[in-house]
Length: 232
Length: 232
DNA sequence: CCCGTATATTACCCATGGGTAAGAAACAGT
DNA sequence: ACTGTTTCTTACCCATGGGTAATATACGGG
Image 1 (cartoon, rainbow over the protein chains, first blue to last red):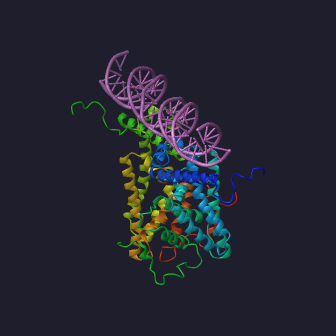
Image 2 (image 1 turned 30 degrees about the vertical axis):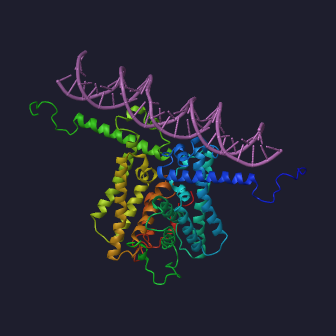
Image 3 (image 1 turned 60 degrees about the vertical axis):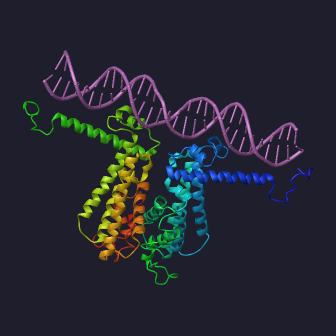
């Protein structure tokens, strides 16, 4: 409790114990990064743990130092993706603005997440590959995201920034467009992620907003057509 | 070749040979119906051929009378879905109307297909579970559908019924919303398929069309809100 | 220098499930 | 009734791949 003051004066937070834990966490993350890439490339069932290990220059059983099994790896990929979206929602919730503004902000953020590997996890993997317990967690998170979309739309209708509409259907339509990004987007493509995000934020709320949304500030004449990645 | 005129006077098209072929085709279809249901319920990899056979009151090897293997069953499900969409496209192509009208028609039809089991196949299954050959076919069909969406949008821009926009991005946005239907729609739900389809046709083209699309004929005052499936 | 812990390897287990071989049952035509 | 064909069953094969046991190596602390 107090006796030996000799060992480990915690003046530096980088006590060897800490550094070891850090190294461990980094390795864990490396496994996840590799796994999610492979799962996206080859599909979850098309990827073996040997594939994952091989790409990390280790062997399969080494993975079990960091994860209980394949499905836990899958779950963690998912969890990271959800965490990113949840962060966006938390931030937007604690901000203020009209319903349509919050909705647009969520669209932008969600679209950006969808262009990342962990974001794609949310729509490209199958919940049925998880254990019952983890599946419940994922489904709860999904509901949470859905509720956020609907809440902002409702807010918008209440504050007059969004025209009355079927909330559920609108949320599905928007979420669908965004989720689809996870299926077609690839980093090398003609369209950069930010451009997709901001364009979608306008496009997907165009029919809903009470007043036109054609960008107020920014590029003054800017014709939309310019977007197409030119000849290069 | 000609000699024996005695056997099988083909007065009725229901010569036993034909009837046997029909029975065979019906069984084949039954396998597909059962398989697609199970694949959607439990996922492709979560479904064994024993599961499929059991639900049909037969045994696994019997399935091999109708299909070369599991992946061929998957492919056929896909092919049926694609065929339905292709039919719509063919019909629309041979009709006339403005670009936006053709686009709306495609949205309606595509949305309806998405509410069926074979339609869901198009978005819920993974191309990587197919053989190289079949995967190529499926991907070709997917491109064809994508091209149709883009073509109608382009037509619309050309004939002035659609505002200039990024064709690719618009097609993705629309296709995304529609494809997502295959993930959330279930027959018992509050929203009937036709209503979803017609609502989406309006919603998804609202921001694109040059003139507002709020239903011309039909319910005169009809507030959209009514859609929500009442209390019950 | 020795020990305990964390980490990694080699070698193995084994349930799963797609697929096949051989033969029985159903059935049409003669 | 006999025969060939189609359809289906029983019994089996076996590659795959997730997971484990036993063991070796690296490393920090005393």
